[in-house]
Image (cartoon, rainbow, N blue to C red; front, side, top):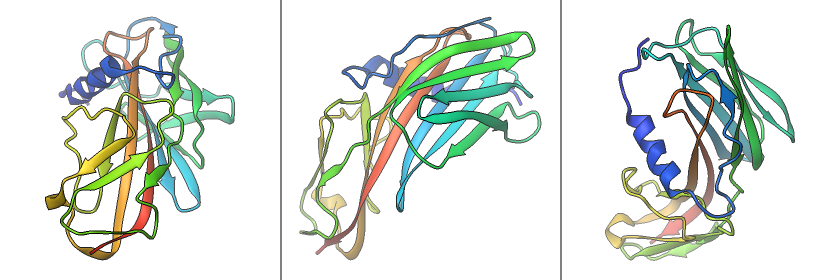
Length: 228
């Protein structure tokens, strides 16, 4: 499979340019043969009873061709080393899931024959808590709804979602700890509204071809909310 789109690269480039604060994921950039393009993500997702982490790495050579049969791992001090599996023969897409999420440093290593990237570090974001509205709250329909969350260490960008609304993915929403959903996007839902806040950051990594990046994100949800 040949690489045909730069959309992910454009998105993480925006994120990388916006990084700052103590949750800035910048770590040692890594070393390597500078022969592979890496598009990687670490996604922390809230589930009932806890969190999971989804790891995904796409690898391309200098010609934009997918790199198959590589050995791809993420290491973290609080986890065993996670080895990603290729998602279909020859796809060059590698993935794995962990049954928990940990903030702190994740180290990416990639080996493909004599080609390699070693010691590329990205910092997992701290888990945030949605403070307002709380689960079980009742809020007025068709009026602006202000959502607040903890952000002692702001990330680069944030996305806010409900069943009826989502911030524009092309808009750079700063992680200020607060966002107001417009009244027209807050319709009546007496029982089952939910609010999700996802915080993002990204880091360029060394050792690969220019444009190699790792994006990190952490999502948390509050529900149910009654809108009436």
